[in-house]
Length: 533
Image 1: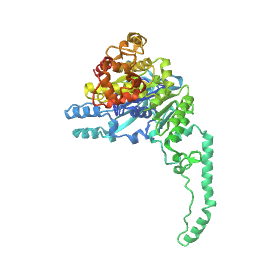
Image 2: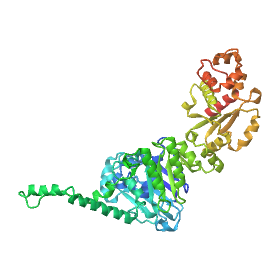
Image 3: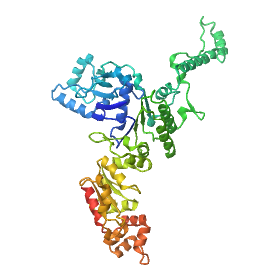
Image 4: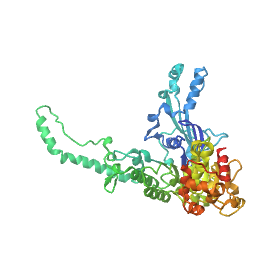
C-alpha cells in the first residue's frame, strides 16, 4: 500500500505531501483544488502512463507548476543561474517482502528514510545542455520540454521501464469512459486478469484461423477471377487475404457485450459501472490499487446506490482505493473517515471522527455533507424555515446575502446537532449553530456538545426560554402582533402563534419577501454577528 505521496512542481502542486489511508481514500475539494491532478500524479508514478499513453508521449510545458516557472523565468532574466525546473512524484510504499526490490533511501525524506518506493521525475536532459543554454538567452514561460527526459526509478535507484508487477493498478475515469474501438486501453488492462494466458493464446489462434479461412470461402471466387483478369498483365497476380499482422489482433475486433449490445455502445454510466466492478473484482492479490474518478457521473441515484454497494462488497483486504468525487452520497456511504479535503495549505484528513458518527452519516447518504465540507463558514439551522428567516435577518443587517460573503446557511433537517458539530470541528470550520430551546435552559443544551465548541470558531445560539420554545413565539415576542399580521397577511380571526407554528415555511417565505423588516430575536442577531466576524 502507498503510505505517503509527495508531489513537487506538477501542475497545481508546488509541494504536496499526503498520507493516504490503507484502504479507502475519498478525494474531495472545490473546483480547481487539484483532485484530478492528484489522481493523475498517482497513476503516472504507478504506471508511467497518462491518458493511456506513455509519459514521454504526453509530456508538455503545462505539466510544470506555473508559479515555479514564473520564479525561474524571473531569476533567469535577472541573470541568476538558478536550476532548471523539474517535476518529481514520489510514492512511499508499505514495507512488505514482495516490495523489497523497490527498497532504498533515494528519496527526498529528511532524515533518511529507507523503504520501498518509486519516483518519477521530469528533468532537463544533460545531453541537451548547449541547446538549453541557448534557449535560456531568451527565456520564456513555456519550457522547451523537447530537451527534458522522464526518469522513472525505484527508491533503490534502479531504472523502471515497465510497471512493477507488485503495483498492479486499475484506473477508471467515468468522465471519459466511452470507447469507440473493440477493447480500449483501460478495458484491455482490466480484462487481462480475467483471461488466463492459455485462453488468450487460444482466442488469438482461433481468430487467425477464422481470418485465414476467408481465403478458401468468401474470397476464393474473387481471387480466381482476379487471377484470370490479371494473368496477361504480370506473372504474380494480386489476391485478397485477411490481414494477419499484430495491428489487426483479436483485441481490436472482439468487444465485450452487455445485454447483446456492444460495450462501446452502452451508456456511459453502465460503462463506468462495469469497468469499476471488473477492476475491483480482480481481488487484492492481483490488483493493488484501484483509482476511480467521479463514479457518480452519468448514473441515476438508484444506479449509483447499486454501484457503491458493489464497490463495498468487492473491496479486497489489501486493495487501496482512491476515489475522487463531487458526491455527498458517495462520501457518506463509503465513510467520512476516508475523506481527504484538498484546497488549503495542506490536505486535511479526517481522522478524529468517532466510528459512530461515521456510521451515522453512512445511514443518511442523501444528506448534503459535501456542502458542509466545502463551505468557508457555516450557519447550521434546524429546518428550511429557520434558513429562510436567518437569510433575511442577515441581509437586513449587512445588505448582502450570507453566501455572497462566503457563508453557507445549511439546514440540519433533523440531524443531531452534535454530529454536525463534530464533523465541523474535525474540519476546523467556523460555525454558528442556531437551535430552538424546546423548553430547556440553553446552558443545559450546550453541555453535551461542549467538546465541539470553541469561543472564536464554533458557538451555539439559543433563544431564551422566557421568550418561547421555538422560533415562532420568539418572533412574536420581539415584534408587535399587528406588525406580524401585516407582514404575514393574516386576519384578526386567526390565532397568530397557531398559524405561524402550523405554516412554518409559508411564514418564513412571507417574511423573506416582505417590504417591511421584522425585529429579529437577539440570539439570531448574535449568530449573524458571530459568523460575519
